[in-house]
Structures are given as C-alpha cells and as structure tokens.
Length: 294
Image (cartoon, rainbow, N blue to C red; front, top):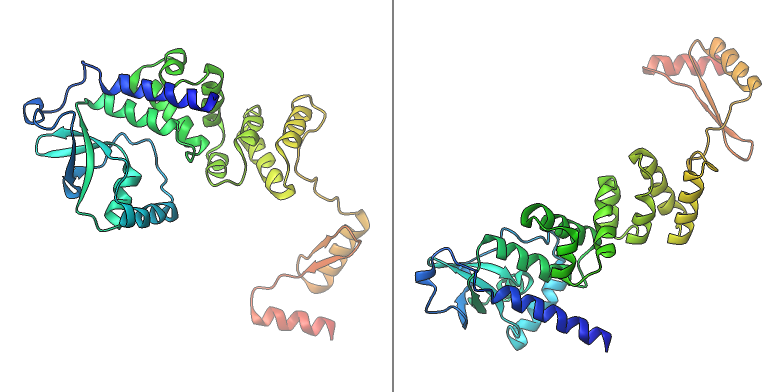
C-alpha cells in the first residue's frame, strides 16, 4: 500500500513540473503543432539531454531492453522538447539508446515545453527515483539541484518526496575520497560502509579503512564499530604495524653485507622464516656473488 502511495506522489510531482505554465521552449512558434502530443520522431533528430545526471549505463541491461523493443516496440514514450527543427531529450535515454541498438529509425515521444532549468529538474527528479541509480549518482543529482537550481535541502525534500535526513546522508557521501566514491559506484562497498567512513575526516585514514573493509570483508556494523573505536582513540590505525627486525638480525645483515660487499636486506615472516635480498646491478655483480658462495 505504501509503495503504491509513493509512486502516486512521484507521478503528481512530475506532472506538476511538466505542466507548469511558466515553462517555455527555445522557439515556441515552431512547437505549437506538436506540443502536448505523442508523436513518432526520427531518432536522428533527437539530441541527448546535456543536463542528464546519469553517467553510467549498463550495456547488458540496454541490450536486454533492445531485444524487448525488437519484439514489442517502445511501450513507454520518451519525453522531449521542441527546439527549432530538432528535439532535445528530457527523459528516456535508456529507451533511446536501446531503440538505436534495435535499429529503429523513429521513436514515440511526448513533446513538452521546457527551458534549460526545467530540463535539468525533470531529468534529476526522474533519475533520483530510479532503483538502479547508484548512491553517488543520486548524491551528485542532489548536489546539482542545490548548485544549479538554487534549492535548499528543505525545498529539495518537497520536490523529490524524500526526507531531508535522507538527502543529507546522500550528500555527505561526496565528502569521501574519490577512490572510495568509485568503490561505492562499482559495488565494492555499500552506501552503509560509506556513511560510516565519512565520519573520518582524514582521507588517508579513510582509504586505510576502505582497504581493510575489502580485504577482511567487513560488514557495515563491523565498520561502524571500527570507526567508533578509532574516533574514541581506542585504536590508532587499521593498518598492521611493521614488524620490528631483531637486533641480531640487523647485525647479521651487516656481517653478510660486509662479506658480499653490498647492502643486503633480511625480512621475516610470522612463522619465523624469511628472505634474504641480495641486490646486484650487472651480470658481473651476480657472478661475483656466486663466487663468494662457492
């Protein structure tokens, strides 16, 4: 029941935006004959929305949609605005891409009047409510509404039908190191992990925690507990401390180095074993080392 209500609210919100009397087109005189109609438009006459907040399109899902379009056609029209003798895409880029892939020459489109600001807002509102949009894309969409539409979080909450606290949580993700943001987009960690990491101000420390989450497969709850301990000073780092080389090993390094005539390095593992690193620059150096042992 609640899910249906949410969809209805979204529908009314988009309808209110799309039917606003203040919306104007680039050239209204050329738009009168098709405004408010669903018409077949040549795909080659459609320009992709420059305000599209979506930056990633899954090729596999578009291929699946393309096959469906080949069989059933385009069920839901795209939305465009008339711009002189061309059309600017407002929403439906996946459908447009899939239709091109299916080899269609025309596509059904609902023609609207919209200026640049409304184009941006409609694209943002539509995308924010898509289930397959990743958290960073949603956060960037919210930030675009703040920067380009001069909306407060309160006003944005009213426009998109989401709680202000939800909007704030998304926006805070943009404070994360870009590497971590990419990790969220690619699914290496979840938004929950990101929300925990954003409580660490130092980006270098954020990255240390990020690496540990991936390496140790930490849950969101485990990450939250670890971050809490760090903020309380109970742990200073999540990176393992470098193993201290015993003095007798250091002394042995010097002795062997003196015999071989070069600086060597002895490293130990947790089982008590280790490796001896003997550097050389030329083949003659290597043969000289060999002769020392034979």
